[in-house]
Image (tube, rainbow, N blue to C red; front, side, top):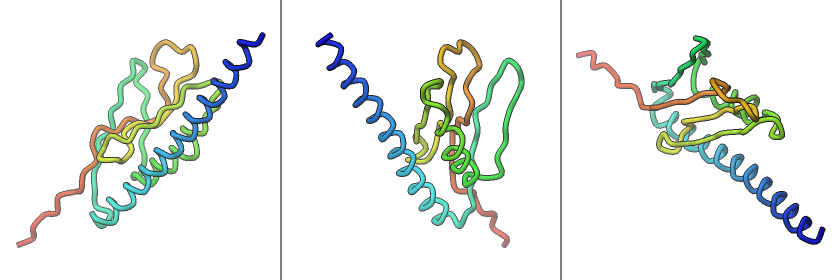
Length: 126
């Protein structure tokens, strides 16, 4: 019994640190996104990676909508029933956000995977 208490304390601290780190990573990424958006005058493109044996998909109007969906849906999935993911590998901007239900074996990711975000090339009108 005396060994059980330290294990419970460790798991509690570890899970709360993971949650805080996830929120912190998201907030930092959103700041980078807003600065990038401003620097490109809201003129950008991004590439979404999708694959499914079932052929389903999703689309978003823009990265503001992606960040909103991440904050309000994907990152708010029940942490007891899902594994939550967030990565910012596009120069600090969102690359993965979503969740997978615990125990799911195939094609279970709900969210988005963005492989590239770049400022759009403006066309010269000479």
